[in-house]
Length: 376
Ligand SMILES: *Cc1c(COP(=O)(O)O)cnc(C)c1O
Image (cartoon, rainbow, N blue to C red; front, side, top):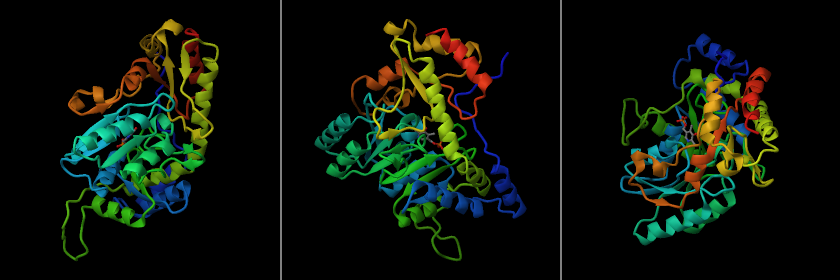
């Protein structure tokens, strides 16, 4: 059997080990130290001027702290894009709040501005104004930033930008991760860069960064003894993991380029095929890191389903996966309100994520191509 080809696997640049070794040599084996500070500086420099980054143990932890910092409490409602990974929505429930799910639009597959406004108006009419909007750049594709920001300003509801999949993407030449009132990043093992596990909270306000670090380190008040006036969390990133992150930052742009090449690779394979659409930017304003390359199959036209194609790839030990199953279809969220029709459901039914790593070899690409060629 050929070795397994994964959707997205870790891709080390080479210098990660040096930073990790330095942590050992200097005995900084703790959730603080020079690598944590160095990694934060490197992300701040990458994202732009007046950006502040708090390195955390995961993207999920960053979302949880973002909700706390925006004052989300028990009984509140928070709007969330339905088509996403469960980690976008789970922290709403950690706070005892209720998620209100909103459908996607067809251009970027992200939160639909019309449905969003409809949801806000209906929740207000029912007596509760939502406390925040969680918008996601799915698979690295920027959401409709201008449209969402207009709605956010109009109703004075802050946006939490879930940029877990979109480090290296831009909208109108501005980097994803800098659009929200608070933004978050993830460095899980399958993301565009990895620290094995990790995340970050991104803000334009230095005091928000300081508050995030305070909450992430057990909310210790300034005192010689352990004194607490608030509930804290253990959410800081390890100095070992941050060392991996520092090395990964050195190859981020290169890896974005390679992921974008994978997208072209699929466009080329499917260029003459009927009923298969490779997910791509709707206009020049959008630049996706193409964290994952996805296709949408119109079964009638194509003559095969996403399911059939997935099984054919699986037979050759090549991983492919359906798109995220919308949150409003998840049993755990079955009682949550939902605004929209069936767009996200159709994407889930007809879409497929294909191997997209920046480290796929020529031989691996040939293996993928050989299976796909049978379908075009
Ligand atoms: C990966 C991911 C997260 C969570 O990040 P972790 O670091 O795994 O906790 C949140 N949202 C989206 C859209 C993700 O893909």
